Length: 160
Length: 119
Image 1 (tube, each protein chain N blue to C red):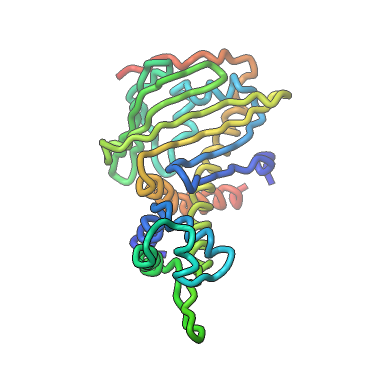
Image 2: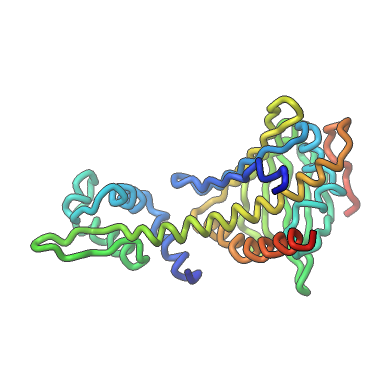
């Protein structure tokens, strides 16, 4: 059992608005968790699904900045881009998110970094899309990869 | 659960009246007339909503003497719960990688926005 097991990831799919909310605590200061969300050299180490390499075109995480990155694997590339609408160090990142396979679709995402003291942070990420269908398609996209990554995780544990 | 069934379930639940009906049926079975009670719509309109829920497998109709109460199929909701659980596990994978990264980072970082990367 790793120490991370103490921090479960919680997901809520709101029944009234097409919103997904993820909550997670970290044993690190808001400054560190924030930096891991803004420094492209750090982002590539954790953000993408494990079975894809993450390639960053640009990542200018400042108010008014923008980003574009690709997940590369299985002979395919999947592009994502968006704009940073509000970035306040160690506090909040508000950004848009578009999967380039559905270029007219856009999610409004907000990451809030709450200082819990003692070098701990609660991260709350909400993703608001424009229809329940889009919300459900996003949830469904986790289905296949969730299972695959679950087994990879098990492989890692067994190899220790 | 095949994807087309899933999308039927979710489009059935995309309507606020149908979500309300499901919430009420989670408490107890009810007849169409009982379900229609609180809504400012005809029994025919309520029946139409029920048909969408029924086609998605979310509710069923049984025959009990003169009544045909509507019954919520709870196992369909269990499947939806497992679907969200898989998405949760995917996010958990991502954040466990972030845990490892944070543990390896120095403590005295400046929380400044990241440098701009080449395009």
